[in-house]
Amino acid sequence: MASAPEQAARSRANSGSGPVRALPAQPGRNDKVAVEVARYLGALSILAVGAVHAQQYYGAYFSVVPTIGTLFLLSFVGSGVVGAVLVAPVRRFGRNIGDLILVAAALGAIGIAVGSLASLLVSEYTPLFGFMESGYRLAIVLAIVFDVLTTVFLAVFA
Image (cartoon, rainbow, N blue to C red; front, side, top):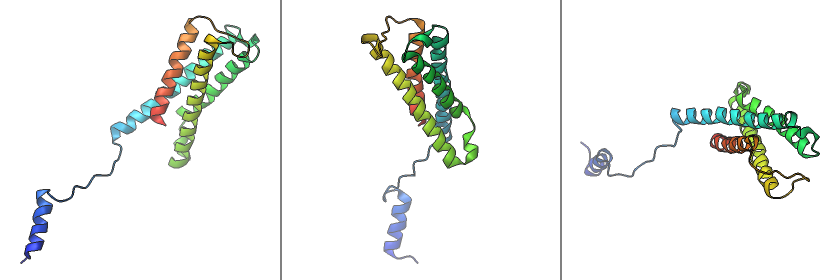
């Protein structure tokens, strides 16, 4: 026979009037899938940023503009590197080191996108390294869109 205090304790445990324990927060499968989708969309966006800068460097002859041309080329190369890392199977190096590499690449991509966007906006209103943009041609609109998408998607991932 159980004593009265033991019966009361069992009764409280069964009735739910005892202390409420929170379940540990664990991301569900849907959350993991959403984060991975954000990673790949962010990778595609930063690759598009690089493609826009490459087109402007080679096709629109920004290669002859001092400093700005070099920055366009560096943006193209940097975007290609971080975009490739973001789609590469780096988790084969191990889960921890792979995640570290992916987060570093995502932060690098965000840095490229935010730097590109900030530079573009500054050059719309004041000369930047002696160069000033005027108007919103297609390449500028695409750069803005892909810079913002890169930042949003990879912020979700990182």
